[in-house]
Length: 318
Image 1 (tube, rainbow, N blue to C red):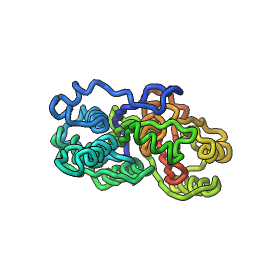
Image 2 (image 1 turned 120 degrees about the vertical axis):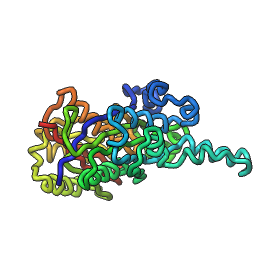
Image 3 (image 1 turned 90 degrees about the horizontal axis):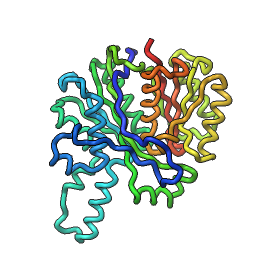
Image 4 (image 1 turned 180 degrees about the horizontal axis):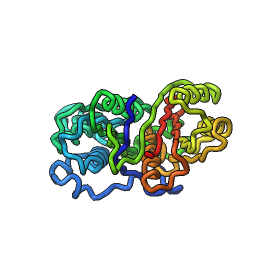
């Protein structure tokens, strides 16, 4: 398979983890300089502004005709607009409804807005695959490169609202976990450039692997398919989120498979959300950019509530 390069990155995420806040809110930029149309900006909800601004920033130096695909991912979509529309249904007794919140609540809104603003007439896809949404989009982006596209924009966006946070707490999904939100975008390229940060070497997803042995077997198979052994992984990045039951799997893998690798976490910075693995990829690429990496070959392992599991292999550009 042809190599796939990460040539540019962009992010909107929380700056620091605060133990006092219920969840980690993204530190949003001044959107006026990125989304210049004031009327359009006012109609956008928070998540749409986050995603559109982040995506536009990622392709800011690239002509529109050079972007051959826009692929976005989200686990829960536009929650605020969905809540607004549902509340309006109740308040207006299903009559005289404003369609704007419904239109803006659809999952593909962010990818569509980026295409409209930059006049990009190309492949446009959105993935909503729960905890594997970003990985699905990333795999699609890699396949587009293998099929001949030169530049592909891949991004992931999720937001948290007070209502959704309360619901997740009542369902018992946030025991010991701090929820979060964020937007990360990556410009994938077929050719390496001066700005290339890393090579995206491989990706694998699986579900319903509950024991350390089952996951370890998946990891071994994935590394073997990429002609690697566990001892060749320099940096092992895991999705530990503070829940002792869920984190046991990560700790076991660190001790059993990667005792000599540098191990680190990322959800202490961005919080837990369905597409949080996109922040892990951004963190690795950013570390490479700043030449602070503890090694050349990196493996990211994340699972979302022990249901959706993913492995992402990254190499630093030589």
